[in-house]
Length: 219
Image (cartoon, rainbow, N blue to C red):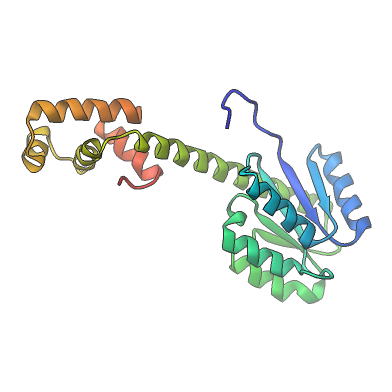
């Protein structure tokens, strides 16, 4: 990841075996200045995700998936289950496109983690509203992931002793008690504490606790 690079624009993935539906949705999104990418089958979309994972390219731009329930070969439901297992739906919210007969199934998928479903024929405005909400959720989760990654990188720079001092600082112990628990001098605690604050890029124990609460737990 290169922080100096501008963020990639949001993308809506369209997975539907009907070319006319894909083109109609792409046109609708173009009219709202939203980028889209179409796939004629669940297998094609799955292949794209697999190829991206093989190259070690993570999810970078806010995205969501418009997914048809019934398709030849792998169904939309089977694709959704695979994405759910891998955790892909955290940053690629899924909106199912469903016929009337599939509504109960679509409701069940929402309970299992799909973002929403739109019944065909759908209202353009309603669908776009849901897409925008899904993209906003994707952006929020990507921001959280990046923040957690930065915290993890900072934690990796700490020595074992600094981890021990940090844990006790976060628990609210004063330097004297930390020194007693670790059998080191108060001055040594002060040095380690200062290094922890510097490496974690915080100025206080409260700020450090808040940072760790938002990110991964300290080792």
